[in-house]
Image (cartoon, rainbow, N blue to C red; front, top):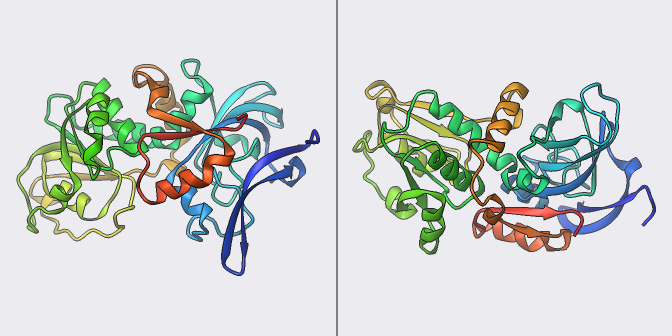
Length: 331
């Protein structure tokens, strides 16, 4: 491999057919940006899988390298904020969507996309957290502004996924009582170990009566899936409760009346971690490196190489992954 060449996972399109492979690329092919970063770790997210199969709502133009998360070391800088040798996290914005992302050994990005790696995190730990953990952290932060530990149980949907599992861990650290929703009856031990006190099967929450309001059971919720599950969570939330939502893998549609909002005062808060303000990002990352840092963080993830990405992408699209999948770019 020449000095200016590196390995990247590349998705190519030919007549509507998408081919995925690991290829040699040149640093000269990277987009313009303030920071050239050597990537040590990335992580696999649902949005990456969509990009890898040609979802034009995520990525418009191919060939393309997915990877909305990356952590590494600055190699060269045109920025006053960062210098060569600094360790940085890059998540969200356009990384991995229409700008070549973290499934490569090098990226080049604007300085405004980077956050200093907190002292309390290793590079691998930062990618176990990744966009999923940032989204979970923002969700918990917004929920905790109005709902306190002791107000009642917090229900988390998509509980074995990245955002769900990290949300449970953070909420447990903060002293909340957590109820988890999962479609995987085999993962109860995993969820209990994260801190879930009660577990509800997805079919049971989906099968609740179709009424404008349901029995008020939860002080708050973190929803990662949307659709009927989110509808029934909102209808089951106690007066003045808070529900955050950040995903639509079940459905982007909601079939609701206004009753939960005007009769119980329920608040529904949307979470857009992709463009969340930098001051809040840094606050959440610092909390994730200290008081919110999950115990045995690396045990929540499996580690893979570039050559193993195809298989894991197929699994995440089928909803068959649990926890986090970390990509080691040196493997």
